[in-house]
Each structure stands twice: as structure tokens, then as C-alpha cells.
Length: 346
Image (cartoon, rainbow, N blue to C red; front, side, top):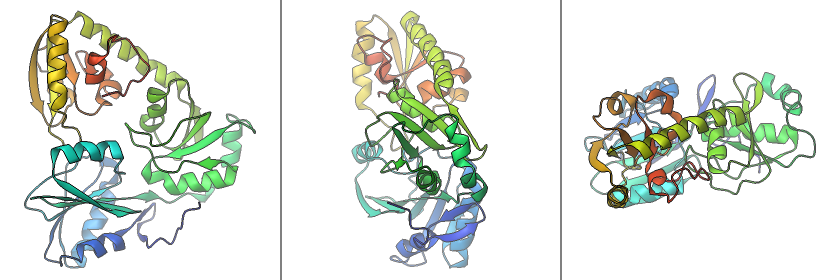
């Protein structure tokens, strides 16, 4: 189904489309005395600033969060705000299930804007941001893709939420099928078959396919560089780092079990399972409570290895930034820790 470019999207910057009218409509239900916090990933702070300006000019008490947010699992729960507007991320079912375990919530909305109402807390709006496709890329997309993806190949065009408009236009140009929904860094809500052409930028999202389905052939169509690349070589580099970390876990004596307090990452039920597993392996352990599981914290912990119960991408993408081995809870709980069939298992 083609994307409706006139889907009540308000243009705020040359490169982006943001459904500000839809956001304002939701806020209007409780009046303009609502205090609003707008939070964005690091690369979208300029969009967040424009959203704050827009809402402030409409009479809302809108503030811009200076903190980075990495995904839908990582939003603010601040009681002095009535609304948290979280820009640029989809809310996948696996993350919503975790949020529902940690908070009493009710889900609503559809399309560009999803809401969750937190009992005793703010209403969180997850709003899309879309990059507007550049005509100069669309005009040469067949040329750059044909060198990699041969005619007749079973190809599915996929995307992360901000690249939806690009994905639909590129799929239309190439005569290919487009995925029914966006992917996130830890979740693909549709079966993976044949060849995947990911439309976006960077390796984070296309690597998700390889981490969940290593036998898949995955190409990255980088909309900013105007190029196509098979991500297999990058995947193999991360695979080598992963194996090294798993070997470090096998040799470790003292293990730190790290728990994150982020609403979509807090997994206390994993702690008891890990404690039993580590006792069975004859290892000592300590449980460490963190919010942000980053190298700044991990590298200074007095343990031999860290088992991460938060975002499973921490035990993949940041391994070259950690000074000690870091693995995920799912790795430690496997009978064979070197089983690499699903590297994003929690």
C-alpha cells in the first residue's frame, strides 16, 4: 500500500516530516496548561527543538530534553510532566510487553502516533519522524541497486520508522515488496525470507536481520551515501567480538549481573535465573543496578565479566568499547554459551 504523503503531516524542517498537528490534537484533550517534555534520539535534536517551538507558540509549556534516547524502551517517566513526547521510534510489541510488566499502562492511538497512559504518571506519545525522500537518490536508485540485487531475486524492502517514506518510494521504483511494518534494533515483526534490502543509514538496523537470521542475505541501501553494501563482512567482525566475549565469560570468576531501570529494559525476572545458572557454573556474582549501561560505568566495575539484562544490543554493538567482556542474559542462560543461532536472545 503506498504511503499517503498528505497524512496530516506538518512540515517543520527541509529534511523531515513530523505529525505535529496530530500531537497537538492529542494534547488539546487536556488543555494547553499541560506541561510537556519532548525527547529525541541524538540525531533528531533539531526536530525536537522545532517541535518545542511549535508547541510553545501554540501556548503549551513545552521543554526539550537534553538526554539521548536510544529506542522506545528508553523514555522518561517524570511526574512533573503531564506528557512525554518521544520522537522517532516505533513501539514494538516485545518492548510494550516489558513496559506493561513494569508499569500499569493503557495503550492507544494508531498510525503516526501511539500513546501509553501510565497510572500515576505521564502520558507518553510515540510519534513518527519521517525523512523526506531526495529526488536525486530516487532517480538513480535502480542504477545503484542493480549491481548487487539481480533481477528475479526474492527481495523484501525493509526500513526503520524514520525511513518509511524512502522505503515505499524505493520499493515502488524497483517493483519490489515492502515490509508491512518497521523494524527496531531488537525486533522484526514479520518473517525473514530470501534477500533483505534495508533502506536507511548505518549498520545498526540491517545487522538486526543478521543477528536474528544469520543465513539471510542483507543489503544496506544508505540513503545519505547513495550506496548499497552487503553487511556480511561487518556482521563477521561483530561475530568475532561476540565469540571473544563469550570466551571471557567462560574463564571469569566474578560476574556482574547488570540490571537497567529503563521502563522497557527492566527485567528483574532474569536475575534469579542468572543467579541459579552462575551458581551451577561455580562462579561468584554481584547484582549491579544501573540506568544507562554504558562503557563509562561498565569499564570501572570491579568484576571479571558483565552479564547484561538490559538492551541485547549492548552485548553486540558496544563490545569494542568495553574494557572487559560483556554478554547478554540470553547468552549466559544457553546450555551452550557458544550457540550463535540467535544473538539477540534476552
